[in-house]
Length: 69
Image (tube, rainbow, N blue to C red; front, side, top):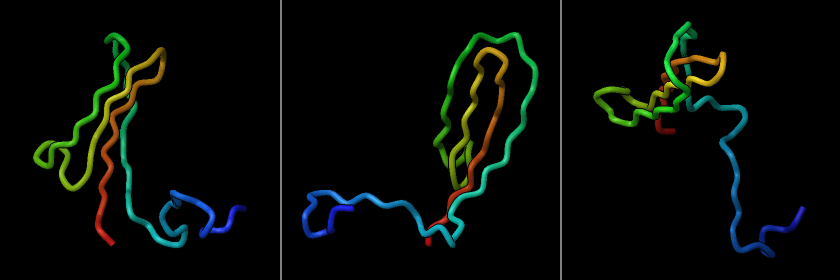
């Protein structure tokens, strides 16, 4: 591992002992074409974001709730 003083950009993830996001979703059947739609409006996806994925047998609608730490 490169020491922090030798890098220009340091990227890390969240603390593995904390929870910052919870996701809940459903899967369903559809004849719709493949697509990916993201919803990032606070009125439509309160306190987080939602997404719809449809791709060859995988169909799901997910909502993720995020909170500040």
